[in-house]
Image (cartoon, rainbow, N blue to C red; front, side):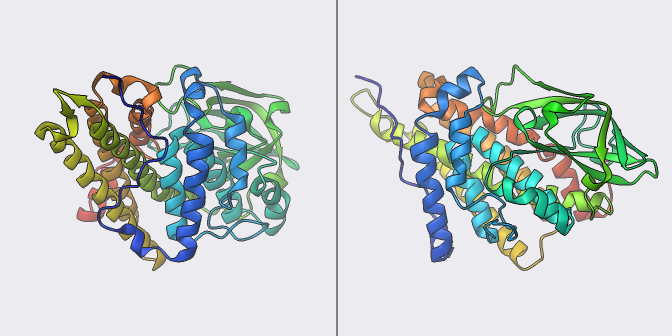
Length: 397
């Protein structure tokens, strides 16, 4: 019998009726993003992923959606509410992790940082073009020697008249090689953290951007190494409202909120594909969904996806009320990232050998889940943040 073809549009899994908790506006935005994902992303992304090539046409068409800028409201940003913000991450992840990361870096980290920490003049200068995707943003915090210990960044900023001289290196910087603006985090001579916006980075003397090759996950989004050698940036490009690392964490905390939803979305998509396949694929004269061992995998996946969805919704409600703690968001990221690994692995098993073919989508979701497990804070660090909140003891250092 011929191998069944997985449907491009699958019934969305929602056993505990998360849908009923959305208002009409939230549901309409969710449907718009879902339709865009199913028409623009899913049918077209695999060749780009396989070649490790950035899908510029797909990525730039995201401006058709009223989502760039997330919760920001100034300069054309859409002012998404907390649930809408989560649903955008969820639906993009169901399509492809690389597209979700492109959006998250540009809209959440780069634009979000400028919108939250820039002066009125800085926001007016940069936000309109970023909201309209006329300019792409990147966010440079992680360094070759500084990953989880983000407070220990080594990049320096020495003031020289009206300019700062930046020296250091950054690593794993999403969008860097295609960016029009890069927010670089560095410490000044007083040890104070600062965010410095580099404009037109391809033409800055002393700035070298090199894409990282050989990734097994999120292959269609570009990550780069950045080397800064006496890079000059005008003092007006230092973000005006950065006071301490806590300001940076505000942005990163919202990033972890989005990643919790992203992990749930990737897992949900993998389960939906696996269920569709199991109902159509026949062995021994009947669909493999009729076998107990396959049903056990399906139930495991459905249960974990449901728990991930519910955790996201509970976190969103707490965030709406201003009650989200560092431990809460880290627990959601920790749980959902490891469960995404598990669910996508089970989905691959349901498809047997067909599970390793990217044409069936699960292989892409499966390897992308490995990336989710590590970024926005490794799962080990997020676990220890929760432990610190539970015990009052810091076991990270």
